[in-house]
Image 1 (cartoon, rainbow, N blue to C red):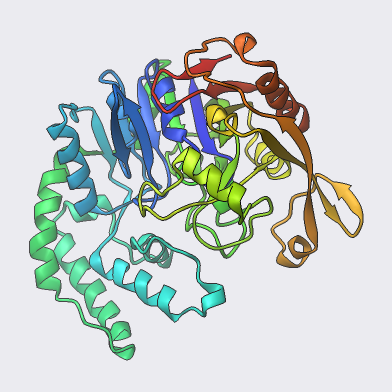
Image 2 (cartoon, helix red, strand yellow; image 1 turned 90 degrees about the vertical axis):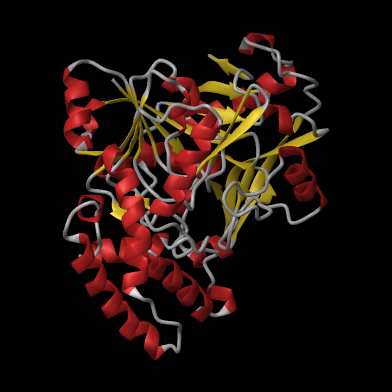
Length: 421
C-alpha cells in the first residue's frame, strides 16, 4: 500500500505532521522531490524538529526513511541534519539515500544567486538561493553528478570537468571562480560520511511492495509551485505534484492507494507571484502572527490570506486527491469572522476555474462567503463531531466545494493535536 502526501497550495502547510502520523503505521517514508529549499517542522514532546532533506518519518524508529532519486541533495546540509538528529538521540540507521539522486555543489549556489540578481525587480522569483534550480538544470542538461558518482572514483574527474566549464561562464560575469581541488577536499569527506546510507532505492521499494509493506511518499513544496502546473515562472524547479512522486521514487501509479492534499484553514505563500486571496492588510498580519508564519528554511515572513477553494479544487483534480488534511483549524478559529473564497469573478462571470495565465488572473477577483469564527480551545478534541458548530460548518463547506472529504484536522501545533476522521 502506498499513501501520498502533497501540498495543495504554496507549501508550508504542515505536511510533516501528516507524514509523521502516517509513518507510525508505515514501513517506509520516501521524500521524492525538491531539495533543502523545503522544510517540515514537527513538534514532539514540546521539542521542534526541522527537516530539510531527511523524510520526517525518520522520527518513527520502525520506519525506513528514504531520500528518493528525484531529490537534489546538498551533502553539507544533509550531514549537518544527520548530526543534529544524532545529537537529539534520534537513530538514523534507518536512513537510505538513492544512488540516482543528484548532488548540489557550491557552484550551483553561486549560479542561483547570480541568476536571481540578474533578474529585473518585477521578475525576481524569490528563490531560496540554495542551488536547487541550477542543480536541476545540470540534471536535465545531462552534466549533473549523481550520488552514485559522488561516492565513486569518477567523482574527481566529473567535478573538475564541471568546475572548469562553470568557471568559464562565471568569468564572463566577473564572479569569483571556484577551485576544484578545494571543493574536492571538502566534499570527499561528505561522500565518505554518506556512503553507508547509499543504495538502489528503486529495487528496495519494489521489494517492499512485493512484501505488502506500507509506504508513505512525500513531495516538497506544493501544487501551485509545480514547474508545469503552478504559477509559472514563480514556481519551484521540480514537480511537487503526483507525477513527481512516481518519477522521484520509481513507484508506478497503480500502487498508489490514497492521495492526501495538505492545506491550512487559511493560506500563505513565500516569495513572489500571484496570490488571489492574499490579505496585504491588518488581517493578513494577524493571521501571520497567530499561525507563526515564518519560513522553516529562510525565516522569511509569509504572505497570508484566506483559504481559496478554487485553487484547492484545481489541486484536487490535478493530483487525484482522495482526501484532505486541514491544519491550523485552531488558528483560523481565533478570528471573529472567517472568509472562504468560493469562486472567481472574471468579466462579470463567477465560476471555479483556476488559471495560471497572468492576463486572466489579472482580471479576476475572489468571491467570498463569510463564516463565524471563535472556535475556542479545540486542541484536546479527538472527534470531528465534538468540534464547535462554527468549525463543522466551515469544514463541510470546503468539502462541498471541492468534492473530497477532510480526513485529518490539525487542532494545534503538537504531534497529538490531530483529529483523524
